[in-house]
Length: 433
Ligand code: NIG
Ligand code: FE
Image (tube, rainbow, N blue to C red; front, side, top):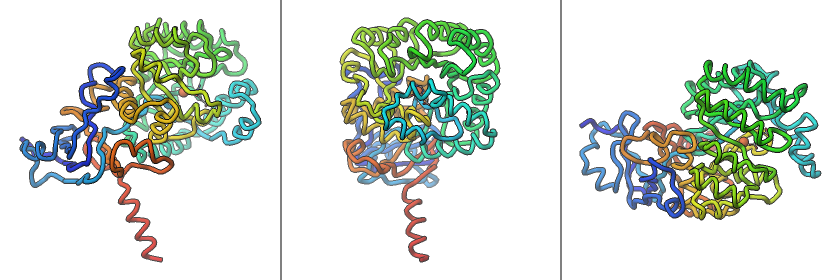
């Protein structure tokens, strides 16, 4: 038996999230987070080799002279957060839209006037590969420091074949260059560019873009912005049906701004996950539950759209829909990288308990991106992606907001970020002065 590379021990509490790797957690399963008091986890060659109480892990024969030990005394251990829905690859920003929003101009009206998503399409097209990568890697590093160890990233600020191919190539390059893991999604159907009717652009995506993306990129999912005025139910269904034939797994932006049957379509196509769902009807919720479609809820988007409309998460959980949480990180409707903020909003406005929110941000999120066999829980054989939170108990995680609860981020068994290093730098600077 080889010595573990790393042992994290003596945690006040450790949420393992164990037991949900086969199927996403539903209903009361979402409250079962596999809590261990005085918890410890050992990692060797990037994978978890032991999980249990400190005594159990020490007695297991994994720990030797070569093992680095980190005490989590008085702290909480969780799996790394998984963010299963972002539009993080782009150049530029849209703070100019804040004043329009405050004047009451609707999100889709800004898009109709050529702003919104189309403004980011223009700024991304004008940017060099290096500029897009530098701006995006800054966001991805911020996510990592905030505890996200795996993130889904959608294309969709390209809209032409060449620009969408470029976006997916840059996502792949960033994945191999950065510590954080990226899961690529093709979302060419994000907006209808000027010069096309919705039908013409839908045909272009189906006939020209999707077949090339399927053979020339590693995009795993295909997503569509299904919304009246953007892509209708019919266009969305045509695009997703073609994507399915071409090997893609499916996602759909459904019922974000209008109740238009997006959830029902998600169920009809048996997509992996339906996202947003702010306006979803009771029938839509029942259909998602029946098909086992994961609801990826994005409370930071609701917060930032500032209309006090949040997804009906309690009704979804009662109906048996597995719920996951994500940031939706993007320059328009959700300019944030913070999963801790999402957890707070999920508890306050989606009325999730801290346990349900943690399930939604880890193992259920891993299911939403097809990675639950590797990440999302602390179980033997899974990747050693672990957070040490500088908080005394789990309730503190959503309770205290606006600053980071993250003490240490461990990715594949290596410490990749630690708050105490940052604090040491600050104290050293103060000392110098
Ligand atoms: O999920 N709804 C469509 N796409 C994003 C917003 C993208 C943007 O505004 O740039 C969303 O909200
Ligand atoms: Fe989105």
